[in-house]
Length: 141
Image (cartoon, rainbow, N blue to C red; front, side, top):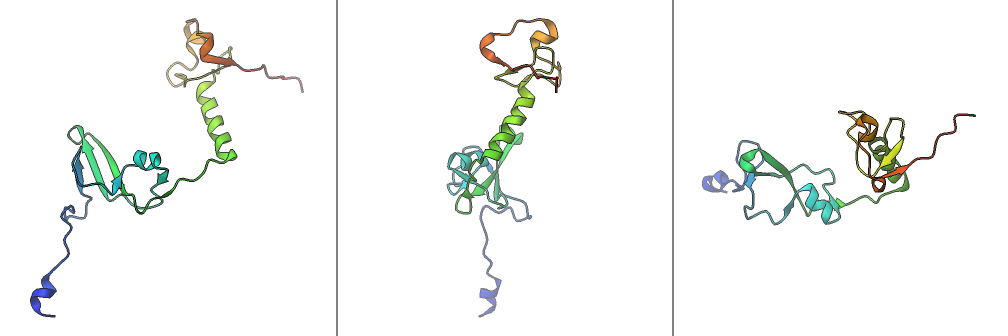
């Protein structure tokens, strides 16, 4: 090998060279093998432990998403009964009014700001199609 061949280095045109990830602008061509987490999820995939290989920016850099290689992505893990039960408990905590009505709504309640549903907070009547009344807990044991 002569001196000229030793000096040749493989250079990635998308690599900024400072160790940071390349930044692509919104709708910039050239990332056909890359996808965001949402795009991977729509394809039935997940990043699978791989590090992001690029970053896509929009709105002048105020919004961004990490890009992952599709060929290294792994299939999504299936939903198990335990996962489904845990998600239902988490959603129930956000949807159930801790006030006197104890209703479970079909949407998340403003518990951080109001602490209860609107009806318990200020008397605004709730549409009956937006909640399910939970059975009263039997306190007598």
